[in-house]
Length: 110
Image (cartoon, rainbow, N blue to C red; front, side, top):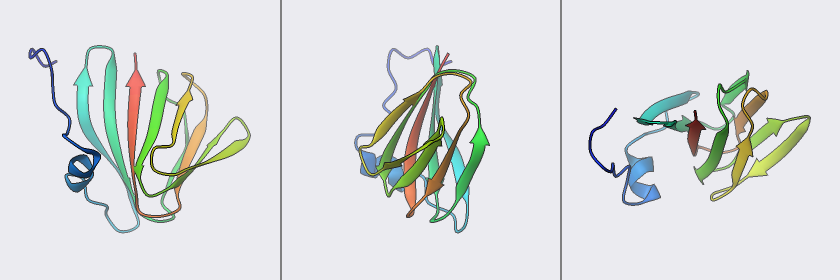
């Protein structure tokens, strides 16, 4: 845990994106922050890369910073573009697929 009263994760989405390049053909999770009660990850996803169906241990908030993804959850597919955001309860199966080179911010509570 960080003893500082705040942590600047980035001054802009462009700054966060630039710090986490996309690797060809991959989904690459980057640790951005581990703090009391939450974890923040940045997913750098190449076109057609898939983060296969899985469950998160706590509720999650997923926001597309750049690119575009298909977010599959509860028998539906949501198409998210930059700024698109979805919340999923803890333990619910979900899957992500990149339609373009994408950067996705993931916040895991708990």
